Length: 413
Image (cartoon, rainbow, N blue to C red; front, top):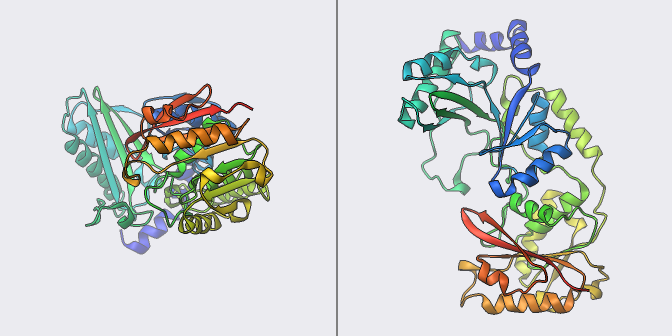
C-alpha cells in the first residue's frame, strides 16, 4: 500500500472502529516495572491514584484498567521504571506456532509502524530454547501481520554506534516488545513509556554520580515524608532529593514535562490525555507548604541544582544555601523538626575511606538535630552503623546496579 493509501486506511472509520473495539474499550493488564525493594511503595502510589486492583509480581506491580489507567500511571508514579501493557498469553510449543499466533495479533491497532521495533526475548523451560530465535520469530510475525494487511511493516531497531546513555537517541527511538516464553506459553508486553521514568526532563546537569530521581522519591516516601514538615537536603549535589521533595510537597506529577511512547500508538486518546494532565495540574499546590532547604559546600553544585530545579518548576520552593553541612544549625533558619536527608560522597567520590565522615555526620545529627528524622545513604552497612542513629533502620537497595544502604532513625529531642 502506498504511503498515501496507508494514511487513508489508518484514518478510515473502519480502522478507528477496530481501534475502539479491540483496544480503547477493553480492560487491559499493565505492569509497573519496579525493583522488589520499591514494590510496596509503588503499590501505594497506584492505590493513591485510584488503581486498587494491584498485585506484586516478579516484574513489579501489576494492575488492570483501560488505557487511561496506563496514562495515569506514567504521569504520576514517582518510583516505577516504566509501564508495560500485557497482551493475552498463548501457547507456543514451536517456532512455527509462535510465528503464526503472533501474526494473528492485531498489531496495526497497537503499535506505530514508523517507530522501529526492539524485541527482547526471555525463555524458561520451553521447547524453543534460544532467545534470539524467539525474538526474531516475534519480529517476523509482527511484520507479517502488517504486510498481510497491505501496510508498511515496522523495521528492526538498530542501536546507535555509541551506546552510552548520554548518546542514546531521543524518545521515541524504539518500541520495545518483550516476549516471555515460559513452559511453552508466551506473554508479550509492550513498553508504554519510552525513556525510563526517572528521566523527568529537568536534570540536564549533574555533579558526579547523581541519585536517580525514582530512588530519591522512594527514599522520601519510605521515610513517610509527605510534604507536611520541613526538609533539609544537607549535601544536595545536583539537587535531586530537594527537587523531588518539592514536587512531592506540591503534588506535581513527575511525568508532566516529558513525552511517552503511548502517545505514538494508534489507540492514543489525546483528549483523555489532555484532560488527565489538566486535572493533575489543577490538583497541584501553587507552592510548597513547608520549607525545603538545599545545602552544599560546593557553590558550583548549588548552581547546578538551582538550574535543575528551575527546569522542574520548583526553584522558588527551595531555599538555596552554600556551606559546610557540619556548620548547619536548623534553629538559625527558623526550622522546626522535620526530615534531614544526606547523600554523602562515597566510593570513587570519596578519597581516603569514609569512616571519619560518617562518624562526623552521626555526631552532628545527634547534637544539632534533636527531634528530627534522618535518612543517610551509605555504600555499605558498616559505614551506616557508624552514624549511631537512635532506633536505626537499614534499608538495602540498589543504585545503578550497586548495593547501597539507607540508614533511617529519629533523633532524640
